[in-house]
Length: 249
Ligand code: FPP
Image (cartoon, rainbow, N blue to C red; front, side, top):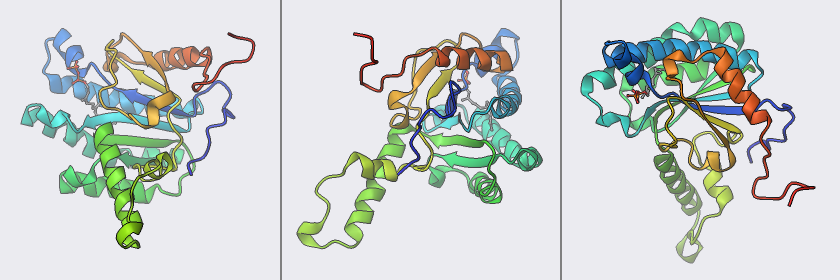
């Protein structure tokens, strides 16, 4: 079972997810190629890891590359994957200094071997770090994650079962336990930049009861103050998880 998110972090969300959108528009506005927007987006991501860690956030999930992003031009795809590699290679000192644990969510099998290798290495090297956990959602799609989880659960149950004992149906708990990172609590707050009111296949299962915050700013323009505002907005929300708050009708 994942640890219950019991609100012991006060009004600070324990787990924040970010859909980092608007890199292309940021670049276009400046007459620059889309890749320049991604480069700036990487700088913002690095800044935001520090800002989130300084604010006591325990888990930060970053939507880096979706299962649908392969539809983009080959040059843009390889540029983004190159930035990921650069991040994994260059940020290890920062991770060590700040005890930041790197994790991955998504379909590892579909990633180029060099990137998959660097992710595995970073996850392995930081696995005992007790600071903030940064989850890189890479070749990630919420639907894909749920399907992979269901398949893993079925395989596991059927491994030791014969005939009629084979699985007939799965529970929510079984599906939950086979997601990519079942030990990580569900996100409390999911932020999307660049003004779009869409979830775009991000943390579909995990975000069932997340609070959503849409910022009009493009991702490269995001600062610590924007994160502060998002956390402030989260702090004022009345989270009911489908129940009723006492004193309210
Ligand atoms: C969305 O903007 C952004 C992406 C698909 C790529 C995100 C990647 C990074 C920020 C760099 C890598 C980061 C890490 C942490 C390794 P968009 O291109 O969809 O923008 P648009 O909607 O304005 O076109």
